[in-house]
Length: 510
Image (tube, rainbow, N blue to C red):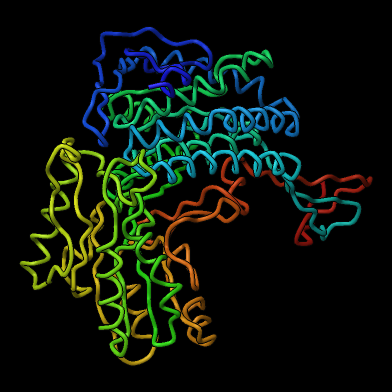
């Protein structure tokens, strides 16, 4: 395919780079990547060795010594150039993301646009790494805080967003003066290799040293564990399941490292009697079936007031009946495949369990067969009438299953259901009632990191901080003041007088 050639993807690719140079290890295993869209072989990747990781770490250490001294606006200029390169390769990279991961071409292109947007955001942020001046209690003293580069930042990204999450971290870290090591999901390494190829020209054109943006494709049991335990990496961003994050958080905390944990979501939309159903329905359907339900912000639960339940149910089934399922590169299709057959098994197992607990499938649930679905990864998105307390509903199944449930009484009862799970990422309410909306956004409202009114749970903009509470991990990435995570904070006091008064009025004379 032309986009593979344009992105420098070969039949066989090396899995680790120090920036512009590829480590040519071939004896640590070979990943063969097949498209979930068609089942066809795309390319293979030689996995990196522990020796490759050590090369990357040493080049990163040296690069940081240089990069931290480059003025932040100059670092921002490099990020601006990376954003321009991404604009040039948007169609190619978006097509690869779609083909390798299985999300629709529209979503693949949107993911690359998200990378471009975060580059723009980071460029502006490079001139605003601000601190604050505080009033000292001591005369002739000035007190302020400032932020310094932290060091080596590692991004461990998941398969569902093959490139955007890396950009969230790497571009902000770069303007903050950090260098970035990227360990992508082994399910979608080609998109990561393509990104490394795209930014290579920027690094060469600006005569930058190796080690500022590095990449390593390797086994979690070896390379991943080495990264988690490496004291030279002060900050690791981990996107993945709650179980993965729990392990990573424990290992990193033991060495007093920092972790940004972006873990599971079990996101709900509340519909009150004052919902604008015409506006709400597209948000629900996209939230539930977009990326085939494989977003951490996917809509998993729909909590509907009993007075409108039947109407919503009928509208939902009608909308689902019109979904087009097929090759994600065909823009007429709404829903592409799951990432692999393991995900299909999780989908069917979850449906089996919810039925055993008393749930009722009212639409979908089938695994599709035939020539158009020969990869074996296509399913019909399911709608299931269920109760919030079911064990399987309490879990996050990374698949297009929407649990439909009703509530009675006022909105507080709906919010109690919404909050009644261990995850706390994204949430939404559809209502034209100001009091209900404000209640949802109040301290006694949604307990999630993201709370929306009259928009869905997925599709967050890069301008706001992204992340969640409870078992979602508590991390924040992307917009707002998330940049502070990538820096170390320092409080400074300057005495410009001739005396040495002590704080709190303490007297000490010698």
